[in-house]
Length: 222
Image 1 (cartoon, rainbow, N blue to C red):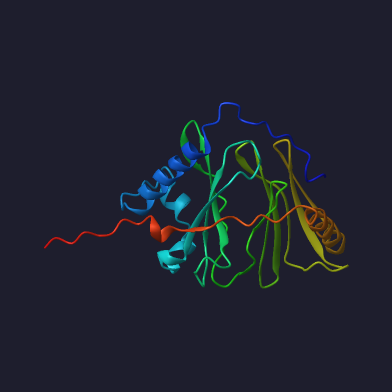
Image 2: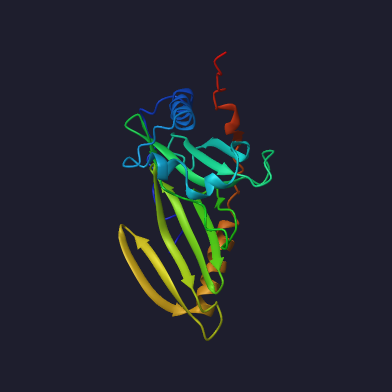
């Protein structure tokens, strides 16, 4: 399956970048400066993933980047354990639909005892996310397709990627989900081939900005 087998349709009537960013900033400001969370609409779960409550706001970041090249920037949110705009890991992705900010529910985080590497965004529009827990290993591949985040392939196993091990391969093509079991060694070859192909694309380094600048100062009455 080719990683670039999809067509991106440019948005001809897209608002300007300034208008896009202003809409995202309004969303960020409202989310960061209010305690009135709307759980049903996903503001709580969609904007603040569980991992967000473990660090202070000085380690939270945001950036704008058009992942799929359709003319509409996505809003990226991230976190850094060390802060200072270093080693920021992608947490979530937001897009604009009908002049509203929509969470893509990427949720780039795992529990404390999971071993997770930061998701990687490639200039081809593909996002690669690996993580593991004890014997469980998972490799997930996403792409933004005309403003919508889609997971198109996943490999996972609790038996390792050895000659005698078994692995499940999950493929989403044209909206149809197919799952099959394959030899772990063969799966590793496919994964390595995917990653080698992605290696020909440039790794995107978003221009992360600190969210601490968005928080409004608390006014204390005299």
